[in-house]
Image (cartoon, rainbow, N blue to C red; front, side):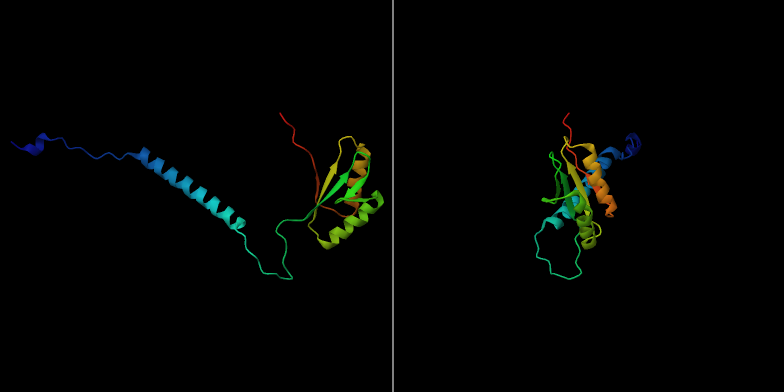
Length: 137
């Protein structure tokens, strides 16, 4: 009698579900490690050499504030509405990609905020943001 005929021939099963789990685990591991490496490169303190042609990575921003009393503050310096256009032009001449952040008290008349926004536009400001606070749910 032939013993090999009595044995069942089992084919090995390829379990694909554990393999998929391992692949996803490796994918997540490499994504997280790459993100961590990018953040670490920006946080490592180094003293960079100086150069005349060096530029900032982030555009500079200046806050234009209209207080509840109607006073206009240009980056913490009180100026009149008539001088806002000239002062904005001076800052745009220094740095072209500057961002102006228009902040105003919610009690200020709408017309004063629009007048300040109009002066910024007349000066040639292209990047103007209006500051707000996040509402709590």
